Image 1 (cartoon, rainbow, N blue to C red):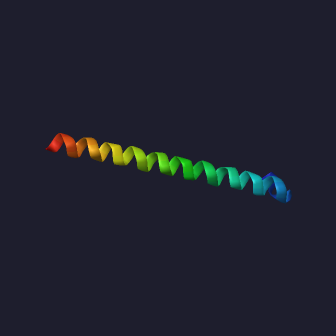
Image 2 (cartoon, rainbow, N blue to C red):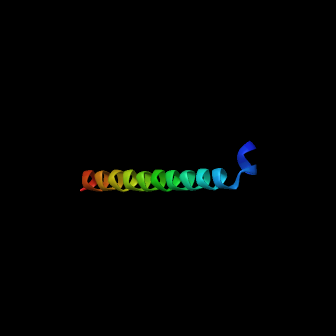
Amino acid sequence: MGLAKVPGVSTAKMGILANWARAVTQTNQANGLARNLRVAIRMQ
C-alpha cells in the first residue's frame, strides 16, 4: 500500500471500500432472501 503515507487518501479509500463491502453484503443478503422465498414458495 504505497498510499498509506497519505492519511487523507488512505482514509477516504478505506471509507469507499467499507461502503462498497456493505452494499455488496446487503445485496447478497437480499438475493439470499429472495432465493429462500422462491424455494419456500416452490415447496408448498
